Image 1 (cartoon, rainbow, N blue to C red):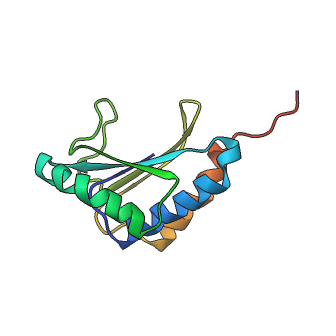
Image 2: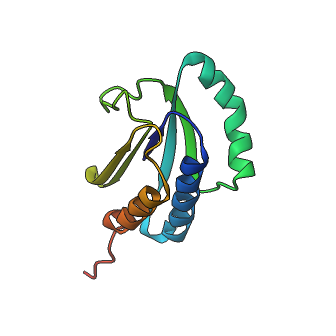
Image 3: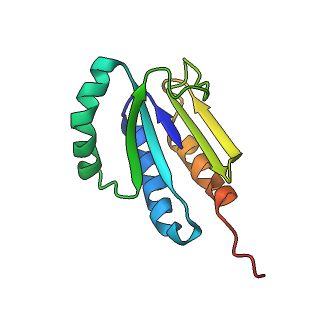
Length: 126
Protein backbone atom coordinates (compact mmCIF):
# COMPACT_ATOMS: atom_id res chain seq x y z
CA UNK A 1 0.00 0.00 0.00
CA UNK A 2 1.54 3.29 -1.12
CA UNK A 3 0.20 6.77 -0.40
CA UNK A 4 1.74 9.49 -2.57
CA UNK A 5 1.14 13.18 -3.04
CA UNK A 6 2.94 13.65 -6.39
CA UNK A 7 4.29 11.67 -9.29
CA UNK A 8 8.02 11.99 -9.89
CA UNK A 9 10.80 9.75 -11.19
CA UNK A 10 11.52 8.22 -7.77
CA UNK A 11 7.89 7.29 -7.22
CA UNK A 12 7.70 5.90 -10.74
CA UNK A 13 10.76 3.75 -10.05
CA UNK A 14 9.13 2.43 -6.87
CA UNK A 15 5.78 1.76 -8.55
CA UNK A 16 7.42 -0.10 -11.44
CA UNK A 17 9.39 -2.30 -9.03
CA UNK A 18 6.30 -2.98 -6.94
CA UNK A 19 4.38 -3.75 -10.14
CA UNK A 20 7.01 -6.31 -11.17
CA UNK A 21 7.09 -7.85 -7.67
CA UNK A 22 3.29 -8.05 -7.59
CA UNK A 23 3.22 -9.90 -10.91
CA UNK A 24 6.09 -12.16 -9.85
CA UNK A 25 4.41 -13.02 -6.54
CA UNK A 26 0.82 -13.38 -7.72
CA UNK A 27 0.82 -17.03 -6.61
CA UNK A 28 1.54 -15.77 -3.07
CA UNK A 29 -1.56 -13.57 -3.40
CA UNK A 30 0.46 -10.35 -3.33
CA UNK A 31 -1.60 -7.32 -4.24
CA UNK A 32 -0.56 -3.69 -4.37
CA UNK A 33 -2.01 -0.26 -4.85
CA UNK A 34 -1.04 3.40 -4.89
CA UNK A 35 -3.42 6.00 -3.49
CA UNK A 36 -2.68 9.49 -4.73
CA UNK A 37 -3.62 12.07 -2.10
CA UNK A 38 -4.89 15.13 -3.90
CA UNK A 39 -6.98 18.26 -3.57
CA UNK A 40 -10.34 18.24 -5.32
CA UNK A 41 -8.95 20.14 -8.32
CA UNK A 42 -5.86 17.95 -8.60
CA UNK A 43 -7.98 14.81 -8.22
CA UNK A 44 -10.03 15.82 -11.28
CA UNK A 45 -6.83 16.22 -13.31
CA UNK A 46 -5.49 12.88 -12.04
CA UNK A 47 -8.65 11.07 -13.11
CA UNK A 48 -7.56 11.89 -16.66
CA UNK A 49 -3.79 11.53 -16.25
CA UNK A 50 -3.53 8.29 -14.22
CA UNK A 51 -4.67 5.95 -17.01
CA UNK A 52 -2.18 7.67 -19.33
CA UNK A 53 0.55 7.31 -16.67
CA UNK A 54 -0.20 3.60 -16.21
CA UNK A 55 -0.07 3.01 -19.96
CA UNK A 56 3.11 5.05 -20.48
CA UNK A 57 4.93 3.31 -17.61
CA UNK A 58 3.46 -0.12 -18.43
CA UNK A 59 1.96 -0.51 -14.95
CA UNK A 60 -0.33 -3.54 -15.03
CA UNK A 61 -0.48 -5.16 -11.57
CA UNK A 62 -0.63 -2.12 -9.29
CA UNK A 63 -4.02 -0.50 -8.76
CA UNK A 64 -3.92 3.31 -8.98
CA UNK A 65 -6.50 5.26 -6.97
CA UNK A 66 -7.19 8.81 -5.80
CA UNK A 67 -8.30 10.04 -2.36
CA UNK A 68 -8.54 13.39 -0.61
CA UNK A 69 -5.36 15.21 0.42
CA UNK A 70 -5.57 13.99 4.05
CA UNK A 71 -5.87 10.36 3.01
CA UNK A 72 -8.38 7.77 4.14
CA UNK A 73 -9.96 8.36 7.53
CA UNK A 74 -8.17 6.50 10.30
CA UNK A 75 -4.89 6.02 8.42
CA UNK A 76 -3.28 9.13 9.92
CA UNK A 77 -1.01 9.86 6.96
CA UNK A 78 1.55 12.45 8.06
CA UNK A 79 0.86 15.84 6.48
CA UNK A 80 4.54 16.30 5.61
CA UNK A 81 4.87 12.80 4.11
CA UNK A 82 5.32 12.89 0.35
CA UNK A 83 5.27 9.08 0.14
CA UNK A 84 4.13 6.54 2.74
CA UNK A 85 4.62 2.82 2.10
CA UNK A 86 2.97 0.19 4.27
CA UNK A 87 3.72 -3.49 3.72
CA UNK A 88 1.19 -5.66 5.48
CA UNK A 89 -0.15 -9.20 5.55
CA UNK A 90 -3.35 -10.42 7.17
CA UNK A 91 -4.07 -6.98 8.66
CA UNK A 92 -0.64 -6.85 10.33
CA UNK A 93 1.95 -4.25 9.32
CA UNK A 94 5.26 -5.94 8.57
CA UNK A 95 7.20 -2.84 7.48
CA UNK A 96 6.54 0.84 6.85
CA UNK A 97 8.51 3.64 5.26
CA UNK A 98 7.73 7.36 5.31
CA UNK A 99 9.48 9.93 3.12
CA UNK A 100 9.27 13.70 3.07
CA UNK A 101 9.68 15.60 -0.18
CA UNK A 102 13.00 14.68 -1.80
CA UNK A 103 13.78 11.75 0.51
CA UNK A 104 12.55 8.92 -1.73
CA UNK A 105 15.57 7.92 -3.79
CA UNK A 106 16.91 4.74 -5.38
CA UNK A 107 18.47 3.55 -2.11
CA UNK A 108 15.12 3.98 -0.35
CA UNK A 109 13.31 2.19 -3.18
CA UNK A 110 15.70 -0.75 -2.83
CA UNK A 111 15.09 -0.86 0.95
CA UNK A 112 11.35 -1.09 0.32
CA UNK A 113 11.78 -3.83 -2.28
CA UNK A 114 14.03 -5.71 0.14
CA UNK A 115 11.15 -5.76 2.67
CA UNK A 116 8.68 -7.39 0.27
CA UNK A 117 9.46 -10.97 1.41
CA UNK A 118 8.13 -10.00 4.85
CA UNK A 119 4.59 -9.93 3.46
CA UNK A 120 4.60 -12.95 1.19
CA UNK A 121 2.57 -15.92 2.35
CA UNK A 122 4.70 -18.96 2.93
CA UNK A 123 3.69 -22.32 1.52
CA UNK A 124 2.86 -24.27 4.61
CA UNK A 125 2.49 -28.04 4.30
CA UNK A 126 -0.36 -29.36 6.38
